[in-house]
Each structure stands twice: as C-alpha cells, then as structure tokens.
Length: 221
Image (cartoon, rainbow, N blue to C red; front, top):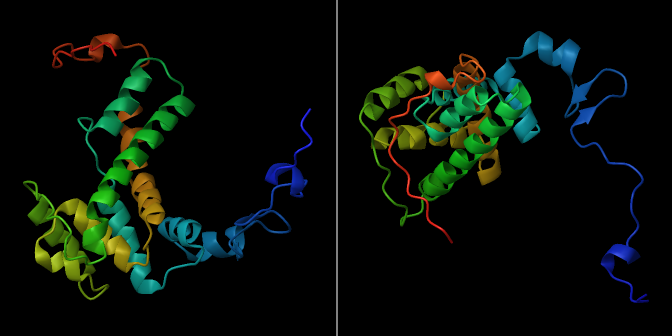
C-alpha cells in the first residue's frame, strides 16, 4: 500500500453538507427571506425564481420585466426536440419523474446552445454573429417591446433581433449576466411546455405516434 499522501487524504472533510440557500431553522427561508410569511404573501412566483437564481429579489421594474420574459419564453411546440422527447417518453410509458428528467435535460441543452450563440451579442462584442430572424419574430418582439415600454430599457430590442436574442436581452437587463443564470432561467421558463404536451399523451399509446418520420441511417462506428 502506498504511503504517499495526496490532496484528498490531507484535507479535512466536513461531516455534513453546508446549506447556502434554504434554511429550515425556524420558519423556512430562501436566501434569508421567509417563504411562507413574506415571499408567499407579497411576491410573485417569478420573483421567487429570480431570488433562487440571483440570491436577491428584483426591484419593481425588473420584477415585471422578468415575469414578462418568463411568459414569452415558455412556448415550445412538440416539433421542437425537448418537447418531442418529453412526449415520446410519456408514450413509451415513463413515469412523471422520467418525463421531467428527459424534458429538463433536453431543455437545458437547448438553452445552453442558445445562450452560447447569443452571449457575444449580449456583451456587445463587435465580432458577434448576426442573429437569424425567423418569420413571426418581428411581431413577437414588437409585442415584447410594447409590454416593456416604460418598464425597462432594453437597447437590443430596437435592433430587430431574433425572438430568442430579444428574450435573452431582457433577462440580461434584469441582471442575469452569466451563462449559468441565463440557462437556468430559460430551462425553467420552458418546462411547462413539456409538462403540457406530455400530460396529453397516454402511456404505451404507440398508435398515436406518426410512422412517416424521415428515415434514419444507422452508421456503425
């Protein structure tokens, strides 16, 4: 047996995990705010999400803008991979824990790709790639601008951005300035779409799944 001592062997280890966000001593608190007598009584659920991610509550302007961004970010159709995966998991007989696991992982992966694509534009980097604008984006972004008029100034909205970039720009101006914060919020916002679509599927109802999907090529590696 080796007598060499590495960093794992030479470091003291705690006997319990340290709580950093949720306190169960006395009334339950999240980042120091009492959940039942304060947060539940005076704040929106969107404020609770902001608090969980940022560790602080938003001011009134950011609270409203953040709520609008969450609602705008929610819809994804079953044609999108994360929602498709959740629906298919349900059809295959997965229980809700499995469906939500599939949906959460797929939504997080999509959010990571989206945030990494647009993060340079959010930071104002001159070399940032132009954002592709899909049909219908302009009308959606116009509605977003109208709702935020007089609430929060989001300069990027004036440049005709894609819908995804517009939503990320609102979150950016709400104070979410890291990749992890943006990914967390975009994932949380879109999870209800996966719940809504998957809950309408019957387990093992394979007859409802289309068979005219594009053929796949299986390649051995």
